Length: 547
Image 1: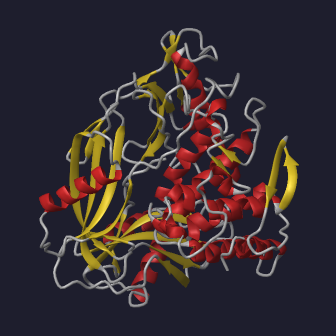
Image 2: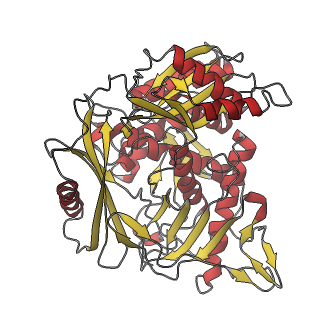
Image 3: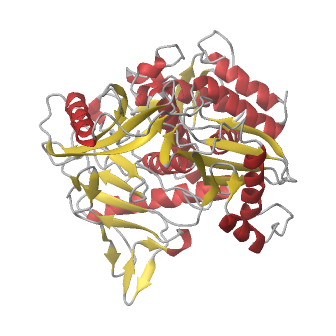
């Protein structure tokens, strides 16, 4: 399931130390507190700018570095958390992100850094040329798709500083994209040492969820639409003008790492405001599921976590349905702030517009706007698990009798003849034949869809506990890796703990050990140190061998 580069926040500091005049002026002209007394976003940014100036050394900031605000969280008690990206000599720093934590009065408390490595390079001039980096990335893309004929292969390198993989070094990040023999997109991001040409890391740029279905999954659902003249548009003015369009079974055109929408999703319209027939014969039926899934996910994040839209800015995303030919995938893309759904191949999978898939995809957008967990190694597994966790919680939140809540991922889109009841199983992830139930030192070497099993297993145990039970008509039997017995806290507390950990404590490099710390910090904030909830989080992580 996909996400690409995300946009950055407002400019904050010069040389990583002094706040810009523009930021201070904006803060001065903005109210210093909400009606309930909490500091405003502008006040939090101003306080954080002062903290950066006072704690530049401990944050690893030097005159060669700049910082940019990515996200701001202000707690009910006024505690402030300001998340930054950083650059080094105007180059983005992969793993340079950090979060500054401030007391309600603006006093500095602490910070979480993705890496503590000192960033100092002798030169930011690459030895390996951009065309050479592009060639290396294309070779990596072909190797990852061995046996597949690729067309329209392009690659666009971007120079950055890699601080995620050991000693910071100059690197090329290259997004290589192509189309397979059916015209569907394939993509890989390759990180190359800009001095030696050695590959540092690589990962799929499209975070995939493969599935199938039976047509419409949500049944008859309410939709908020827009009346334009005498025609209704599938555009929701109550949720940031989120809309759904028909991709007409076309695919994107990609040149030099930049993709253009050949079919920019023609907005669905209707004469009587009654959409679809519940069958695949009517193209609007898949659109109903996609729009409904978007609505349910929007409502979940807003009503449960107070987040107004995926980016927290009240702006809606959009959906493209009927993408490609027999496309067994769905993905989120930051560059268009949109979700794209294939129709499936009709035998293994059908249309991929199920509710938990929508929740999964949109949650990739939330992750990219907050922790931006790198889509590789253990952090990549946590990225995928975050989407599985929230996709599952969205399904439970929607309380739709046609697609009742469960701890199965993509169960609606899998054809009965495929041999599996779902794509993934949170109670015992290894039931899919590939995912890890328990952490080990080799988990980070797995595909992120399989290394995610450790966090999915943790989430199930934290919510429901261990052992055999039937929930909402589905039988589960979740073991523990250490032979312990775990008592669950319920879905609501799972969601609140994971959301706070994601938005306040996790960074791009967070691994499983870091996730344990982040969720414990979140539980402490929400329920108190030594609380039953805090202890349950610790027990659930120990039960999957993260301790």
